[in-house]
Structures are given as C-alpha cells and as structure tokens.
Length: 198
Ligand code: C5P
Image (cartoon, rainbow, N blue to C red; front, side, top):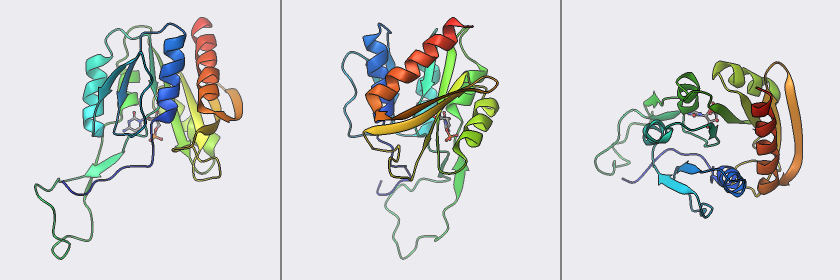
C-alpha cells in the first residue's frame, strides 16, 4: 500500500502513436499503465496498474488486431511478495526478493492473430542498435524502435525523442530528434511500408 517499483516512463510515446493511428483511420485500443499524462481523444483506453494486469488485458483485447505496438516500459521484475500493510522500516528486510514478469510482447508475437504486425520499442543506454537487433530477433518482432535513455534527449518523460527503427535483415531508418508526434508519424509510415511489402 505504500511503496512500489516502477520506471520514469509517462506513456507519451505510446499516446502519440495512438493519436496518429486514430487520425489515419485505425480503431485503436490503448492499454496504459499508471500515468498523469492524458490519453488522446477518440481511442479506447484500458487502465492497468501492474505488468501482469497489462499482460492479461493485452491478451483479452488483442482479438483480431492487425497491428500491435508495444511501447510501454513494462517492469521486468516485481517484488516477490506484496505486503498487506505498510512494512515498518525498522523490521524491513534490506534485500528485496524479486520475481520475473511475463514478457508481454514476446507472448503476443508468439501467439499473434493471423497477419498481425508486431512492433516493439527498446530503451537502451549502451550499444543501442546491437541491443535493439538482439531484442528484435529474440522477441520475434517485425520491427523495433530503439531510443537512447539517460542522455540529454532522454526518451522517458521528454516531449522529444530520437530513434532508430530496425527490421528484418539489416533494415534501418534513423529518425533525428523531433517531437514525439513527428516520431509517431515516421514510425507509422515505416510500419505501413513494411506491411505493404509483406
Ligand atoms: O524491457 P525491454 O527492453 O525488453 O522492452 C522491449 C520491448 O518489450 C518493448 O516493446 C516493451 O514494451 C516490451 N516488453 C513487454 N513485456 C515486458 C518487458 C518488455 O512487452 N515484461
């Protein structure tokens, strides 16, 4: 009830993509973790708190979706136990036992509705393209949007982003620093092109 593990992600990138997809005529469902940022108008919004709730909500809503974009900074780990009441600091264990959360996008990619295109994101600090390529392959994605975190532009919570889109065997498009609305357009343009080329 008093403490939790999370990341500084605000969901702005996902909301920008949802907004752009709706403007292009898509029927959009956003499955959002906790954030103070308002989702765009005209899209369905499903609110969840934990990674496991997000996993269940995604599987419940995926239906016959033709496109799944995973832009959430999902928590990879959760505390192994949740206290019923506030733990007293004097009695608390100083080492936190953790458990692994399900990998939502890898599950979607493995059990995708027929023909569904699956695009992921990767927030990285080092060797960002190599890390992105590794995730693209390991999670079975059709493309991945990689951005650097921890630097000046800093992905999380910022209004701008700078990304590299990776796909297939060496496909690559770099998108220079721009507002997240512009990044969303470029990402959806690339996804459109890749879907048409299939
Ligand atoms: O956290 P990671 O860098 O592995 O995230 C890469 C991609 O995997 C992102 O698209 C993210 O939304 C997704 N992801 C997920 N479930 C997790 C962890 C990450 O769907 N538990």
